[in-house]
Image 1: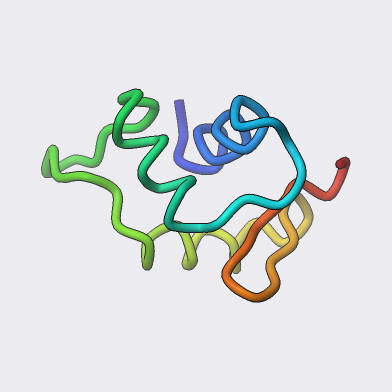
Image 2: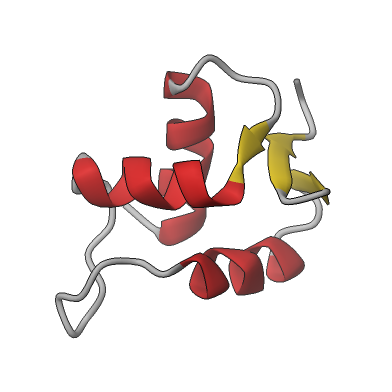
Length: 70
């Protein structure tokens, strides 16, 4: 699973709607939805970077993210 797919799954699994970026990172790491090449946990800044690349999938405001389709 790619990181942006893991982010979408985490948001949906957490009930959809707005979710704190930190909570999404914690969920991804806790449920092993994405594995970095170096095997370290996914940091919040990596999720933030991915949000910039996938603006067609996610919205961001005030430390929260949500899926555009929500």
